[in-house]
Amino acid sequence: MTQLMGRPILEVPGELGVRPVPADLLAGVRMALVGLAVVGVPVLGLWVATPNADNGAAGATRLAGALWLLGHGAPVLRGGAEAPLTVTPLLLGVLAVVQLFRAGARVAARRGLRSRWGGPVAVWAGYCGVAVAVVVHCAGGGLFRSRVLPDVVAVGLLAALAVGAGVRSAATSQAPTPRAETDARPVLDRLPVWARPTGCAGVVRRSALAAGAGLVAAGGVLVAVAAVSDAVVGGGRGMAVLGRGSTAVVALVLMAVVLLPNAVVWGAAYALGPGFAVGEGTVVAPGGTALGPVPEFPLFALLPESGPGGWRLAVVVLPVLAGVVPALLLGRAAATGATDEEPWHPAATALAAAAAALLTGAGAAALAGLSGGALAGGRMAWLGPVPCWTGLAAAGWFAVVAVPGALLVRYRALSPGSPEPAALTGRAGRVRRSAWLLRARVHAAVVRLSGRAS
Picture (cartoon, rainbow, N blue to C red):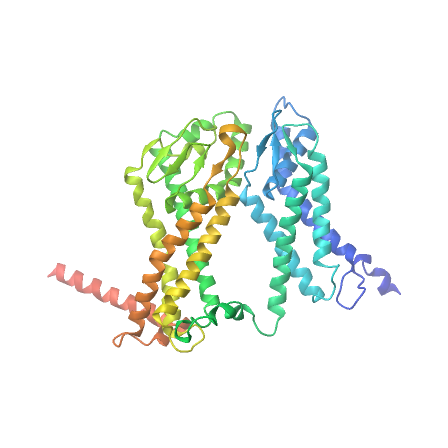
């Protein structure tokens, strides 16, 4: 009896290893409140530190709720004119998605997917319950106001997708045999046997992820270079925007940090060629920049001046470099066979590279769409890259680099004078190859130095 009374009520299992529904509901509520705290604590701190603040505590909490909704892709109205604000801070969105994904995977793994309405559905319901309360609170007067039905739908859809992805991940990890390799089987069965890249699903996904990581790194490099160039050559336009007092400086810096992933995606779109817009009728691209008046914000101060691109066309080298690693992955898989079978035919290698290019383009288009949106009505009705052009550019650059690169790597790996393809795969093969390259470089350096000394 003592042991039963000492056990927490919400942890008493209705079935062996299964928590009751209220515990999962509270887990969803807790996650939503943690996300609100991440946004609300800085906002309330700035409200307290701001002298003679116009709005009371209710206005500060409505602002925090509106930012939390924006992080989920929910539209918000701004000002008395009810101008739409749909730019999603990707940093807040990533935090919410990661939380929901992990919660879905954790609850599904604990329950073993035996309960249909408990577990993940309860977590989703608890999260959406907090979202409904936030939407209702932000629907009143204030600088930022929510739109009740669209905001609830947006938060619910994002939470459902993230939790569902976590549940699927848990189900895949618990499955006795992976299903990833059979997903593309109906399509491959329509091709001739010699043109089928057997077992290409995993390699295609890894190549697309590597290409996406390379594009994101290219965008980050461009943002960093623009910041350094503005501080050194441009007279510090971004720093001049910050000269409005300590509270304003902190607020602008926090907003710039929250929107930094958006700027990185815009930089990747710039490197790809289509660029992005900062208002209707504007374009910021390597080929040229046409800008009008832009809001005073530190990230907008990093934009190039209006005029032809000139030397900025050199940034198109970055997408080329982003396709090198995927080409190596595809070429090695083609030489050894992704499932340790016969090497792929050149046509199968090109087909796998084209599939990875399409997957990369779809991901780039999705990120471009999520990173942009409206900042106000009228001229600022659209900011950010155009999703379709960004996706086509990413797929095109990847195909131009990865298809011939993968074929070249395959040819070099299968040529008679090259090492065996199996020797270049696996951890031991990579270590041996790295040691051989290091030895060759050291030997070349010693020979060069000895020649100079003589």
